Length: 276
View 1 (tube, rainbow, N blue to C red):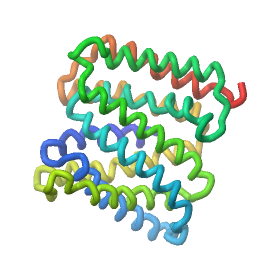
View 2: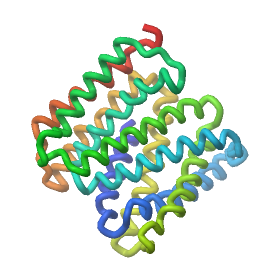
View 3: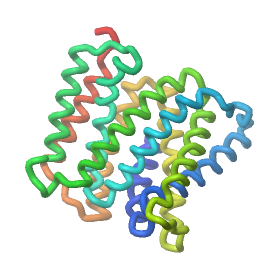
């Protein structure tokens, strides 16, 4: 989980560094190129290349399209609002999953989970502050929309983990997102190749992003979600510290209060039993 936190935070910093030189589709293109190469290399070295098979492609496609949309929105939000605000709003994603799971996965929607989602929504409102233009802007909306994309991806992933090995999931993730990026990268009529200034950030995004997902998935295989999740929540204070040290971003009291509510709501949801 320390590796996952380091990976996601590094990816956020690298995403900001790459933003002046590339749009989000270009960033996703080069991230996916690196990702495909790393997955194939890793599968070959570990002898798991044979685990990659063309099955469950419809579910892979739904997952990866949702993740692609969410990731592009997340990258677009990075240069517009403080890092801690991006991560705080991203943490509303598990609460969206909790509300959607009964309709998508047939899980039970309990009063406790409804209460947790409501508490999380209050936290989101406090962080976003829609009554003031100082903190509520297009970046806030993009980060909130990204949370819905990540929630859709999480719902599809839950079904995939029961049917496909990790290397297969990662392979179709990177390959399909490479195809999506290729289809979108010419939306403005041009595409920019990596430069001396953007090459290092793009490489970091590719390596850190894939590494973070590997670490997070491995952590979940070794310990219960109730143990893993509190470590994942550490991304919020870590991002606030990085934002302060690198970008001089102030940490507002509303961000601390709203972020704490969102994290507490997630904790209530994690501790909830499926049928109670």
